[in-house]
Length: 146
Image 1 (cartoon, rainbow, N blue to C red):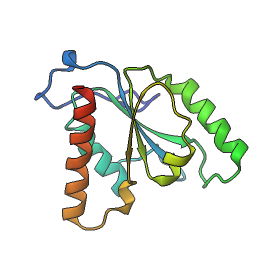
Image 2 (cartoon, one colour):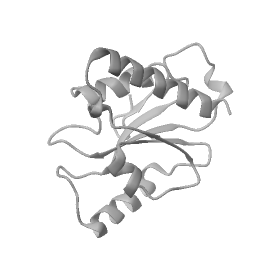
Image 3 (cartoon, rainbow, N blue to C red):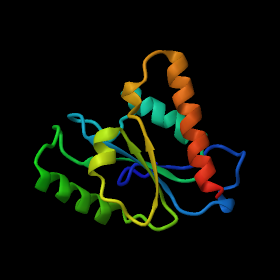
Image 4 (spheres, helix red, strand yellow):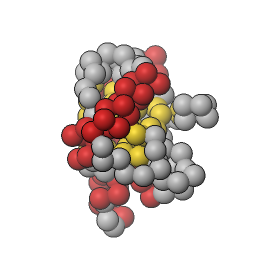
C-alpha cells in the first residue's frame, strides 16, 4: 500500500486489471482524530476494505475535507474540494464513490464517473452490511465494465 495516497492494489482475480482503466476513489467526509481516511480500524473502513478486496482496480480511501472535525463553513468545504482535486487528480476514467448524503451534496463534480452510496456507518446488522458491500461491488463493477 502506498501510504502517501493510501492506495490499495487489486486482489480479486475474477477481472483482469488490464481490462479496466482508471482508478477508484472512495470519498468520505472528514478525518477522525489520528486516523487515516476511512481507516481500517473503523467499521466504515472495514466495509470499504471488503469492497476494495472484490475490485480489479487500484483504489484509494479519501476524505473530502482533510480536517479532524465536521466542516460547516462553505468556503472551507469549497477549499477541501479544490485540495482533494489537486491531490488526487481524477481523470475521465476514474470512478469516484461518494459516501453519504453530505458528500453527495458538497462534492464538486468532475468529468469522472460518479457513484453515490449511503455512508457505510448507516448500515446496521451483519445482513445489511453484507448487502451494502455486495451492492457497492456490483455498482462499481458495472461502471468499470461499461
